[in-house]
Length: 87
Image 1 (cartoon, one colour):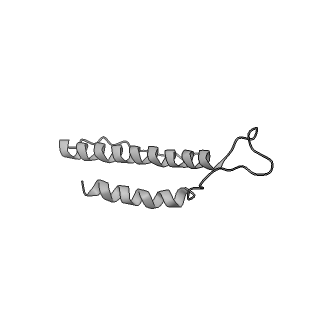
Image 2 (image 1 turned 45 degrees about the vertical axis):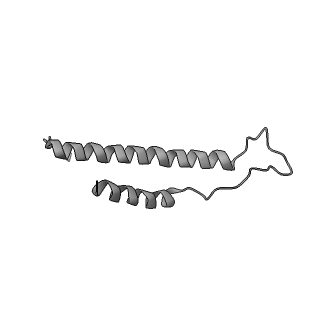
Image 3 (image 1 turned 90 degrees about the vertical axis):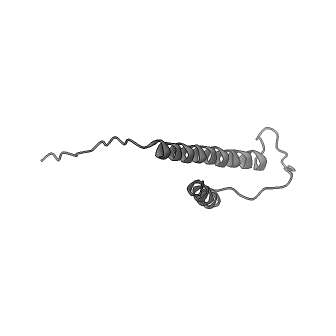
């Protein structure tokens, strides 16, 4: 027996104010995503050394920043969402 899966497609027609709100929220989320990605890449770059450049005994890498992971960035996302609601 073959089951048929139905999907529905709806078109929305937002008002000018709703469209502006959606575009503002999408812009905030885009900026948040790029900032979070930059944080992770910066953390990786600052805490790693290249294999062909590392000393076998020790490698000074300077101050080790706090670990950036999903959970720390998730808490920042909550603040971004609150900001988007009140603007």
